[in-house]
Figure 1: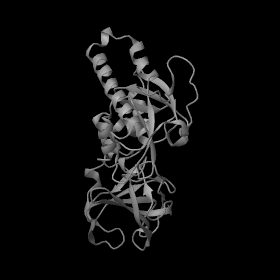
Figure 2 (figure 1 turned 90 degrees about the horizontal axis):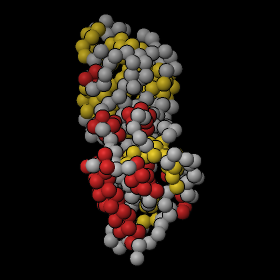
Figure 3 (figure 1 turned 120 degrees about the vertical axis):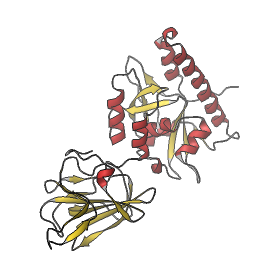
Figure 4 (figure 1 turned 90 degrees about the vertical axis):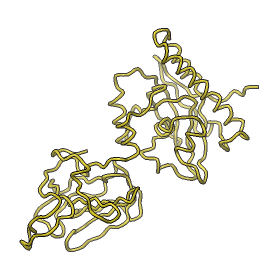
Amino acid sequence: MKLHWLRALFLVGGSLFPPIAFTQYPQIEQLNGKDILFLQLQEDIQKNRERLARINISPERVEQDSIKTLIEELLVCKYTVREGDDLFSIGARCNLPYETIATLNRLRHPSELKKGMTILIPSLPGIFIPQKPETDLEYLLQQAHRKETSYSISLSPKGIAVSYDVYPGASLSPTERAFFLNVAFRLPLRRYTLTSSYGIRKDPFTGTIQRHEGIDLAAPEGTEVFPTRPGRVIETGYNAVYGNYIKIEHEGGWTSVYGHLKTILVDLHKDVFSSTVIGTVGTTGQSTGPHLHFEIRQNGKTRDPASMVPLQGKGR
């Protein structure tokens, strides 16, 4: 006998109803055949995949009500992440794209999913874009899909009510996927002027020819500085050359360094994301004026940041 579980409250051309309380979402205890609710979720996901496939094959024969029905019958369960779980393994077990879980739970990066965290898992493949975006990825998705047909729904990830625009069957584009997985680096300033490139140059203080291990980006004192990629703060401090500086460790053996800061706004050993303000531009240490000294290192060896981020005078 098929069990009847709490379904999401939704909106299609009407008023948005309040989301059900976070505590009321049915709980999946384990992602295997011993859990009846997990089997129910798997069954619903597979049926919705088949329905979406039929819609995509013959869109001219499908009425809008077919999509509405998918939304109306949406099953949303909660699951507490266990040791050994990650975003990709959970998606694979549920036969659900990882971006569906990521966007619904407002993850900024796969590494945000931690043991003990409770997440929502829907029965409908697609992407969920908050109507009030907060992260860089959410703003990017909202702009990219703003002209497409969506269906509004209210859910409560992390116990907080959120209104989403749902795009059934949609997936991240290659650019969006690279952004989420943080394959690429980003500029640490929104606006800047490149004043010194990477490589051999005359030292402005000694006049000797030396290697410049990063690039210098001039900006007004107090300008916000962001991480080039999500990571963990592994060093902060002050020295005579870099002044106030921050060093961040990223996945894949990469690190980044931010020097001459006026202020340091992050703590040691804290995780940071692309939208985290880590400090402000200053002129501490050996500095000829307000600017950010920015380095990217791979396995301890410096690389030219200009080869990995676009330098056009306007960043991020």
